[in-house]
Length: 68
Image (cartoon, rainbow, N blue to C red; front, top):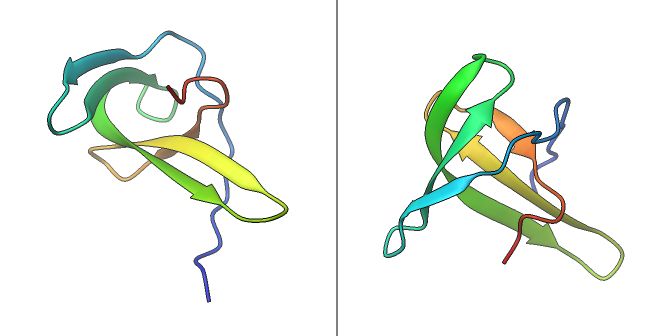
């Protein structure tokens, strides 16, 4: 059984890759209203896929189109 994830905010400013080995990014967190460090995550199934960034404070920001 997979975890249900709820997204309220979408990413609005271009994230920047700061550590390629750890896949660590800096991106604007709309919850904290500041730039935060975090990692990319994704869920993919037969019917649905979801890409998002998760910041240091555990906020998840939907990131369609930033999955490269």
